[in-house]
Length: 247
Length: 324
Ligand SMILES: Cc1cc2nc3c(=O)[nH]c(=O)nc-3n(C[C@H](O)[C@H](O)[C@H](O)COP(=O)(O)OP(=O)(O)OC[C@H]3O[C@@H](n4cnc5c(N)ncnc54)[C@H](O)[C@@H]3O)c2cc1C
Ligand SMILES: Nc1ncnc2c1ncn2[C@@H]1O[C@H](COP(=O)(O)O)[C@@H](O)[C@H]1O
Image (cartoon, rainbow over all chains, first blue to last red; front, side):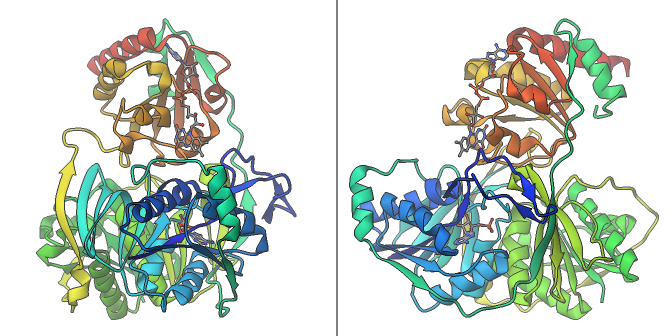
């Protein structure tokens, strides 16, 4: 069984957003980049677990990004995985990202494609579902547990106000979130081994973006907190009713 | 060329956020001088479907197939594509929720339509087709221009106030030519938390962090939530420690919510937590440490011990309800 894990590079979660060029770009000087947490902690680690338990034969990683994403994909390889593919393109539009991954994956016979619930920078959560459409595959989103039984994935996923267990024959795309795997840290051996694992760069057939970001804006500063006497909760309730109008 | 809106329902009941999606579609249709066609799937009474008229749907296409009571992303996609083709739809609206995310990106990829996930505004058509959405988990907003001819917009729930009108709708049955592949996913088991308010829909949320000390104190959070009719949530360390189920965890790696009121108790306000809740309209922070970073993001703050403040607040809410 062959698995492909989609890895995206995102700014560190503690990044402070600073705008520049008349608010048309987000400053990237001083920003450190990480593997998107959902991709690392859940999708990638689950794929590695499946390989370690002998269920998966191959675990490949793919990222759409320019050369500056290589440190992050190397870091992913240090956690595990047989090889990495970097598709040399800017990933500005979820559709383009999906098209490029699909173009690579369509002749590769992956049984399972794992991605994260969403990338924490653009919060679209749509690459996986688009990829499934482009590859004519099934898609299960918001997975919290993935088990493999023969040629079938048995997946627990979040639904509104609860959980559902689905099963689906390969091939399929699954987007992963908390619960799918237990976090782990790359060890020195993994880091050394990763150096010898292949990272292939491929150039996609260029397609058109369907969206573009014209500008950014920062949220307005809060007016400042109004402190309430901890002994007087009636006042808080009154303010929530009369001033904030939320109850 | 009507605006198409995908309307979900919960076992035959249409929820407020779905009316909001129709209302939003109607706002766009008015700007463009056209009408709204809603698409609803599965088993729903006509009386329930007719309610969509009051929010601006002139027509509803109903795919009455019992298999659609469960989410089948490919079948839903086929149904929407059939409706879009029938109506010559170029603008498609869904919500940014679990089902929306399983379907809208597929529809967008199939139609080669530009997609905006989590729309917060109506499209500005003077500059193209520009929509505001949150990025970096609410730390910033982006103005996204859709440049393709067809467009898919996933509205952020709880963004626009809705009002009923006297509008009426026409219901038409839509027959979809499903293929075997459309039902490739088998649903084995569904477990719903019943009797509680679901977090993603809740307009009021009471949330606890590590400051609650342990699961044995959670009744304090639950009592307040019950009195308010609120849902409960928690910070990540709380669900990591199994004090609460993981679907309650909000933040960068958990759920993103935008309730009218978020009451954070014993939560420090780390940036990763704020990422999931900073779209809340009003934030109340209860924390014994006046230096807790959460106070900077709060509208109202109470510096005090949660174990003492919570019962007092619950009591105050009870009193308020009696006198209202
Ligand atoms: C990549 C990444 C992703 C993350 N994702 C998330 C996420 O999605 N969601 C999330 O929540 N966190 C997330 N975190 C963790 C986050 O950084 C914080 O560690 C976490 O939010 C802290 O939880 P807390 O506020 O409950 O606990 P603490 O930081 O321990 O804060 C407890 C608070 O309770 C107060 N307190 C203590 N006793 C009392 C009392 N008796 N009465 C009143 N107040 C009291 C204390 O003053 C303190 O402010 C993430 C971290 C990383 C690195
Ligand atoms: N540039 C990228 N390269 C590879 N995978 C990506 C990329 N962007 C997004 N993904 C995958 O798609 C998931 C959802 O991302 P998004 O739709 O951007 O929120 C991520 O968690 C990744 O697994």
